[in-house]
Length: 264
Ligand SMILES: *Cc1c(COP(=O)(O)O)cnc(C)c1O
Image (tube, rainbow, N blue to C red; front, side):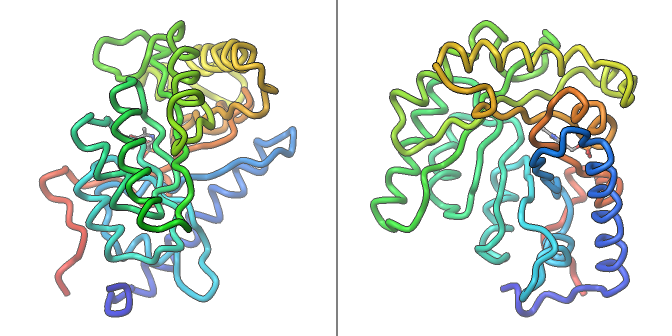
């Protein structure tokens, strides 16, 4: 468990500095002074890196993002329940139920793009809440393929409202909270605080349609957009949540070389 994990003090200091630097860049970009959530994307990084930023009694950070179900299951068992996990990766229907059922502190799944996945997440969270009434409904975001790339997951922009409605109307143990996009890498690399990334403009337009279709205030439908290369540009276009990995934790190892628990 977390108690016997050795945190390297130098690594912890470096990570805390990186986190502080990202936080101040977010604050500088946040001209409208709204609440912006930072997800520290820890995929393929060891559990000790997460614990270094989430040490009791006063954790520096709560929201962490992961991309792989097995890796998240393993990390969630080792690390404190006070962490708020976000699943942000490509999602397979047959993994959804265990994800929602086995991780009580899974706070949000950001990459939902089919009714089938909603049904599986719903079934998992329902089963968990029946066992433990203190567990909250699972937040979900609908992932939108704003760049139209074949290989990207996500619903077409025109299909986002229908899926959002499905969650709201048919999934009582899920809570629809917003829309997520990754966007095209090339556009991401070309993004600056001044240039408007088309993917972010597109997600904002989808948000306006979804809010109108649900009869909700726009502000109730969050936008999750922006990663290390482009989070300042995303904030300029109204992002509520940025997902930053490599600028906090450094370059990631190849998946085959990644370890959850490092050997001492
Ligand atoms: C890996 C990943 C990120 C973080 O990317 P960085 O460029 O390392 O900041 C953000 N969002 C998603 C969906 C990811 O898969």
